[in-house]
Figure 1 (tube, rainbow, N blue to C red):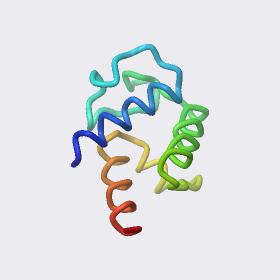
Figure 2: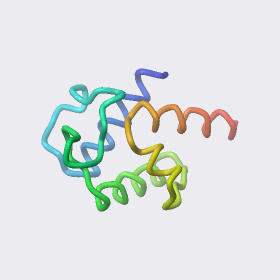
Figure 3: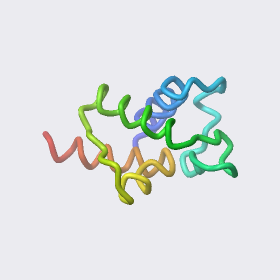
Figure 4: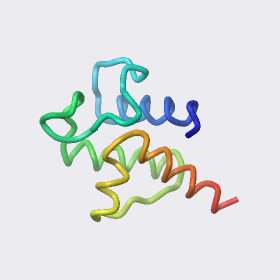
Length: 89
């Protein structure tokens, strides 16, 4: 996985969800959503992250079980985005 993309996504998540933490402190495989997750993101945060990704990269994430899996961690999101970007070029 691309470390620069991973850090970029962490910064995007922190900004989109208005969290007060260092993006570098978020683990790539750490859960992003739910009460047991360090950031404790919720469905509104998911919508904000999804909109930020669409605005920055052009990737649309429809509301689905697949999207929930993609957004579950920075690692999953980076992997999906890298695959999607590679398929566009």
